[in-house]
Length: 463
Ligand code: PLP
Image (cartoon, rainbow, N blue to C red; front, side, top):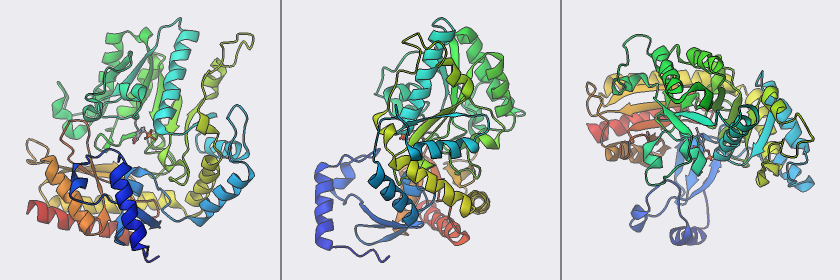
């Protein structure tokens, strides 16, 4: 891998990109003076851009996706072989890789039973929302349609998923949203001072009790589900505090509320276990996943649920309305499950969950050491190889740094050949949390290279 390419073709690609591509989640104004970045090749932890520059990718394809790294021949081969055999058939019929992957997946998820294939995380979440609504009609006479979601969480870009979106920067100007989605407060220890009445002790339980307060305000007989990220991703890399999940589970049970865990980011190894919720002893009714399921080698997402939920849709076959009247066309692509089977094999055979946990600990240690050195780091947090460092102008007030400075840190790392991210998305214009999610194959040297780059960048940007 030397990053060689045909100069002329690539300048044509840049021209075509500049003329016709609408890039995701960024402003285009800078492209008037700078070239858009084109990523040309990838191998292992590294990618090469159109100028042949090598980058260590500390964000797994930008958004927590390429969990097993780039250039995996065995996944490409599995996809090729499957596509030659059968590329597609609608999921009203089954497929060989679809059935095999579902069985393997369910073995990793005790208590879960049924897999519904879709093609994006947003869509997987919407499937669960639709099921909750249908259950409300079938079982509760049209009540229990409300879906609770948490401040700072994100569940996707489609309008119903955004209706469950707790990040104001993403939601502003896209309303009105779908009815019966109700927000509950965040559970972020570092910013608990923003929550009225938050205690110094037992904050986790208190934060979960705020969910109960919302349920009581809305009326328990109107609330069908609670949707949460196990570790909040785009909202600032937030792990719930001690005591939170146990109370959440108790509350859901008490009020007969289905628990929907959005594992789109955490799922398939990112936190050091197969699923994030498994770190906290939670028993969900719905689990949605996408990004790491096939590490980006093919588009695949799914909504996984229990046999109990499945059974609600299967009784009384004489009723022509009694089934989940839903389809996802590309949920029938076989490339996704074919890639996912091989992705899972790699994680197992290469012991990547253990590597993720060990390298996550190393990275956390490095970030904590940086915190001692750079007072602009107010907090470091996360789980496994899913970490964040929040930058603040003042440790006492926790005022976020100007977003442009956080962006300058990202740009400095990029100049050093390390791609990191910045997020928050909860408060418009206040993206102040550096985020790191290297592939699960990261070595100690990779981790040190990432945190050394951040060290240098913080020194240059903040002095
Ligand atoms: N849920 C979470 C937690 C996410 O972070 C994302 C995307 O970043 C989604 C859902 C939406 O997934 P997709 O972009 O595949 O629709």
